[in-house]
Image (cartoon, rainbow, N blue to C red; front, side, top):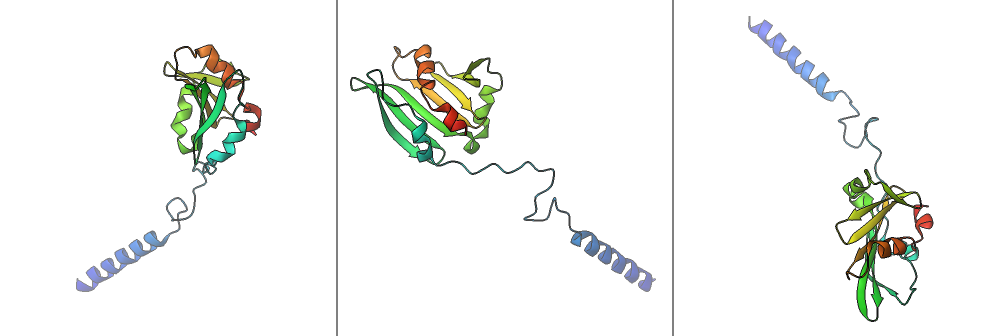
Amino acid sequence: MKKLLLVVALLVAVWFYIKGSGENPETKPGVASQNAPAPLPAVVAGKVFNSAFPKSADGMEVKFTQEKEGYSQADLVKGGRRIAQLSISDTNSNPSARDKFAAATKKLGGMPMAAVGSMGTAVLVGGRYQVQVRSLDPMFTASSREAWLDKFELGGLSR
């Protein structure tokens, strides 16, 4: 009886050893599953976006205020007062930022456009980059925001 228990215990141990050493690519560290989503490309450095911003025009000056990985921001200044904020962000750093564009009915240059609160308007470029204009002055209306969105180099940004 002792020999039988010893043989059974040995068989169980061998079975666990074999089962545990099997190579399963879905659980093996460092190996991606074939069904796993492709990794997102690296987030773009903020300074890369600066060339896509509009130039100063219509008595308004574009002044860059912030630049970090995946984001660049500028103020739109008229007569020394900030009237709007312009920004470009790489949604690969925050993929849920794309969600607001899923139900977008308005488009700008064929790209989905969405309201961001009551004071912002944004467009999704190339399915990845969110370009936004946010009013800081109530006189800077939704149509003003759309006009300034149209001044961005959206085609260059999508490439």
